[in-house]
Image (cartoon, rainbow, N blue to C red; front, side):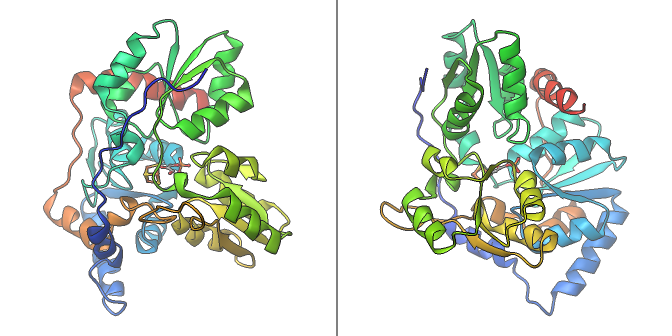
Length: 347
Ligand code: 13P
Ligand code: SF4
């Protein structure tokens, strides 16, 4: 079974602000002082930095040297819950901050920016999503972590790309039919790999949707020795060409573990920062987003992730702004589906 509901993604592309944000409003000469100030403030505020691989390398470095973490969305959630810090600074997009708050209501959760959205989350508003669920009462509702707290509250399960296949396979063992939202490509991939009986929402990631399989084929011909690493939010034809399909952490791991000396990588290019650390001698090539039919405005780089920067982080630590709040009733409902994933993946 395939898609039920086509939704527009009502986002306003924040290109100009993205460029400013990714520059971070500071020069190379100012960086050491800012890093030092940020470390002092993290210690003063009893805060840990939980950053995604797509954020600015300065934030990733700061997380590494200050006892925080750089991770995929599942590990970000796990790290936040396992830590003793009273404040979590989540450098990523809104759903990541909300997930931290859902799991840790007693902690203060701050973000360097509250404007960092995700096209999957924006493309799955709660009202039509509720209608979709109501139309399929016999199905287990499984949603990607890239959704609002309200959507998670309506779901039976939350999954991330690192555990989605295992959880869907587990539900199939129990003969359950699935309702999936919101990413159409990940949903299609899950259905193909597991054979699940699935109805799917029709959302997409504005970054991964742009990878082009023809141009990828051309690049692969020029680099026949390169392994192709693909995030499962990418189109079906791109996934079909992959040597490894996985979450951001799984792709970094593959880059380290595989014997290949070169890799073509279909995900946000900021992941190269950690890939290069993990495998310094390997050649990393961006999967093409150009070519026939190219429309991307921010090719291979998430405009919302780029809004996180060191200046914003220092400001929220100094002034306590940008706090994440989740309505308590919604939080408790969202906790059930989110905790199921955390418990399932703990073993
Ligand atoms: P990961 O959980 O694989 O890090 O993916 C999150 C994401 O938003 C990818 O676009
Ligand atoms: Fe969302 Fe795509 Fe950005 Fe990931 S890369 S946060 S899925 S818009």
